[in-house]
Image (cartoon, rainbow, N blue to C red; front, side):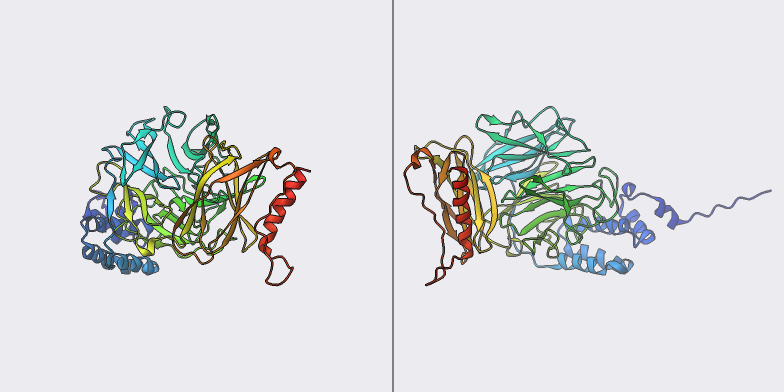
Length: 508
């Protein structure tokens, strides 16, 4: 008689099981013991600690991490950072569910206008073609009942908003509109004097055959930041939608494309300080031009996606960043905490989360900012209206220059219908700014923020003079600076002189 002896290896059983199918605490413990120090084993530790964090039993969560700490000898630093995060004293932050906006369905990806008075977001009914774009207005301290933004933004397909330009004249959308070339692309739509344009795709190489999303236009209009699962990022290529690192995000990185006179440049990966071999999502660069907020499941965190802050260390490089800092257990949860957007005054943040205690699905929340989470710099907001000499509203290009560095600091366009504009200038420099439009000449203005530290607001209306009205009139050049008791021009004068020369060349 032949006897077959079957030897079952528990380690092999758990090694071959997918983390996707393991749910019970006991299974998670076994999975950790037999698959550590793999990344999936660490994700299992996070899941084991999650119920304690959700119950705000931070000591219980710390015990879980301490119990398995020695199994991840190459990641002591990450484990210790999480334990420190859990043990930190609470700061008493107020996290508020915006109940007038949220429903039993899902609301996510809040997008605020630069003045903070309108919030756009994506509403999902949970069915195909069920994503639409809504907006709400802030009246006093209350966000009023939202409305569907309507055509051409909301269609029969899935429509999602990612950002709005500082001037409010360009919206960045995500979807599969006409012209898409990948699994999902970045699109934009522009305001004109007769309404909104057609929805257009961002050009290659911003969009690709891979997945691109979370598009964000910087406040100065000079860069476009987005996420993509394209090859060439940090770590191996993993397409979104595949189960990876405990989720379905794939390996998405944050990229940036810089705008020049010839258009958008080749995207550059932000590098391994910001990006990891796992998922980074929803980048937001504050109008200070320095402070980046984003979500990640690769840095030290409490769960699926945590919100982090990093500071850009060089004005000339997109690769130099401070070490990302987790915004803490009062903001982050074991779930998805994404699309973190800071108000221009730096006092509040808005984000979406599927945390416990919400109204259903994803909800939008507002939180007061701790000092550590605030932007690196405060800014000045200048708003007003651009008109001609007869008070007729004009759409004009507004440009501002950093006189300390003799460099272009940004540009935008006034509203084609109303002439309204709003720009933000980071504190710490001296600026000149002006508006230009074919057939007109404007008087430039200057604002010195060298010694300014606090957030401030200023209203300035700009009058463009038609060339006809300037016949036989003297043209005034402002912002001309000389060294004391000398005839030598200071560097900041050349911006104004170049503007005068350009005007004369175009209008001999």
